[in-house]
Length: 314
Image 1 (spheres, rainbow, N blue to C red):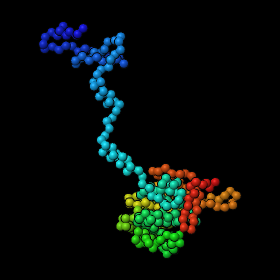
Image 2: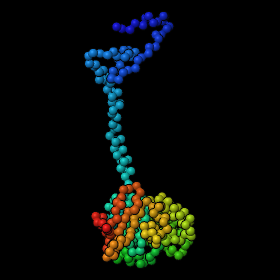
Image 3: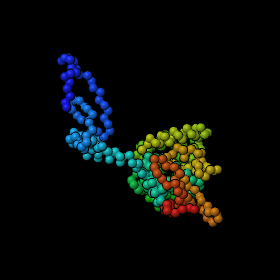
Image 4: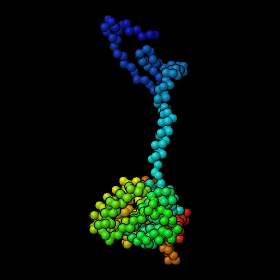
């Protein structure tokens, strides 16, 4: 029976009173009649759904998001790939594997170890891996004399003369000249990096620079400022450091491991029966990357460094 509003309207200027619409029960679709919605009466027969074209847009809106055009999807894939961290290999068999493929590009790394563990050798390997890739590299030495360091490099089989003063720059700083050494590290080195467009830089060892500073407070301040400035340069920095005499797992002044992005620890492991001594490497810390936390043995061979990533020192 159709609704009759005639009894509810006194004249043409009056509108019908608002009807309260009972809540729609779950599972019962509303019946539509013009602009008025009524609660559908229970039916004995099976209810037939409304026309597909009436409800399909609502269902699509709730369950399916429209796919972006092909060019927009390709752009999103490209943006995702640019967020992947680029890797810089050290060129040391086994260690790059422990690092998840190498150092993170433009990161700062500390190689910490006691005497005889090969800190400088690791750093030189890092430099010449870059030279083989056509990169410009800088090695700043505060320890060995330049001629002794170059002779050591040649004995390891590296073609030093092929790169020297072309794509490889060796700088020897005198740590006894406080003003010159400090100013060179703070000011001259960043300028040289920019002028040569160097992508790999080594400071060997940074602990001598730390030792030039008069007290702990100034040491913390200057080291923090230096590392932060180097982060602004488009290069990957490796700094070597001696270990603390009392704590063989820490750098000499206990600062490097907190400031850098990656810490590679080199140390001796002596057998319990004192039958021998092994060299062992451990990746203690690595920001923005997964890495191995196992301690692995390594050997410094006449012309190479090999980390036995499948072996164990225990």
